[in-house]
Length: 411
Image (cartoon, rainbow, N blue to C red; front, side, top):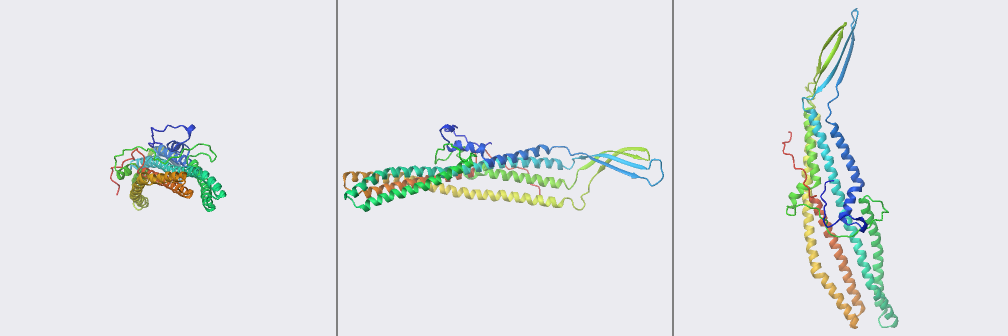
């Protein structure tokens, strides 16, 4: 687990609730999909370690009976043949297993990054629903005294009953919306618990937040080169291409099988003979043509997969950047213009109602407008946080991905 997720402003302390930065560490430790990915890495590591062994020797035995009448009619030959790794096949196989182990390690890193990405998106959804609930509760708290006052005024005949019923209708609509949000909020929280690997009934307290966590990395680095150097998916695909290179090397080496050589003993009519026995398969017709052709096609497929994924990620990064810039402009406009205007409207309407110069409906309409602006403000911040998370995860963690190998591909 080598992802750079340091955040000096946050220290892990579950007693006061979990923030996103803390929940990420919980997910990395307990997410069930990550446990499976790490087990696959263990399997690849064991295979790489065992690939360095010397090939087992081959024991040969033959027994022939002479047709002629002799005191000892049996000719017995036995030998022990050892493989001499002269063709490089053993080394290519060892390099292939080590490359596959590195692919599995990078796959774990990629899976961890995907879990963090999913957790961040789920955290934004849950936080937005939680903040909407709090906003509706504040709106209901402001409407409740107005509703009670207008009911009394309508009963005394000072205002029309339709005005009182409109305020009651607004109150009931907000209560209904609040019930629906409670259900969505509970669903979003269960998704977060599942991503963190916690049981559905876990009582951990979660702290809502719509800000982007710090993932480190040089801020001055251009997004395109940073993505190429740091994106975990591209790092895995690069290593998969190298593994295909080693696979092709091994298949080419297999067209010349290793030489077998070892001691031999023969008993012929009671006479013992000692010598050497060896063998070599001559690649005259097959020469492992199918294996070489298949490995070459698989290598080209790995190259195409890397190039295609890089192009797709650059496209997604460009879209995410445009979306982030647009939402930043919207945030600035709402913060500098819209929110102050609505706040001023509510203050003016409240003052006029207190002076008896305006209808309560004006105040209710002003409160409804302010409430809707607050909901839009939450939605805008949630969209902005999602876009910033998407951009950060497309680029990748701060630690650089492995560089592309400089060796020339096999033709």
